[in-house]
Length: 211
Image (cartoon, rainbow, N blue to C red; front, side, top):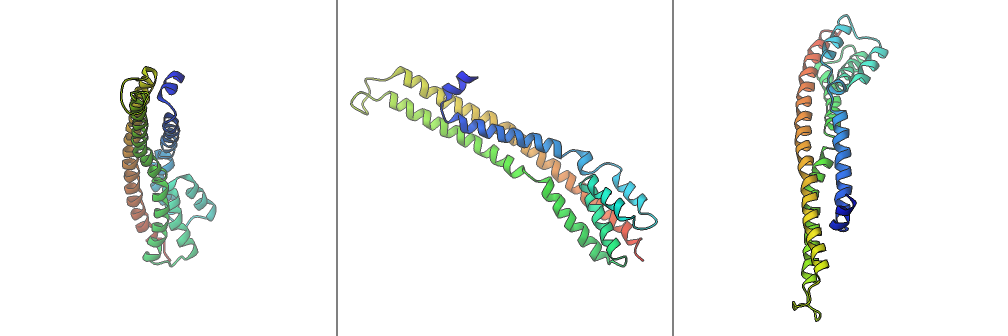
């Protein structure tokens, strides 16, 4: 591996840094976009059951808020009703929508950075390719300058290595980053729709609790 890095020249270090960032983002999103952390399957029914006979105490609401993103949204509605038992439907919806916007931001966190990695890696590979081509043309220059006749085989081989390795590394990094970015974006959109449906159901439940 070290020999490949040496053959690829200094442009490869930017691609290595890009690959480390991309891998860290992929792992972070894999850990964050899990169903138990976003929308546990039975949480909505449990929240409705816990508040069927009235708004639960603050300790229960805080426990709900810390359970998941969906719990945070549901808890915001309960907090609104706890603060104002006669809250209107518009006030309840406003509280849930505010929490929903924060949840959407958390679902989409780092996806822009991952998209940047997917876009930047081929460009960095192209930069290495251009640098390799410059070395190739430089190796073919004669002793007097631009006229051929005294090419340097070692410099020619190094230029080819720089060009090909950087192109390959750029694509190797960009393709998985693009795939994971599209996958995580679709997953975040699906979670967001699920949260919106659950919030709408919970609003109707909260309206029955108003005094």
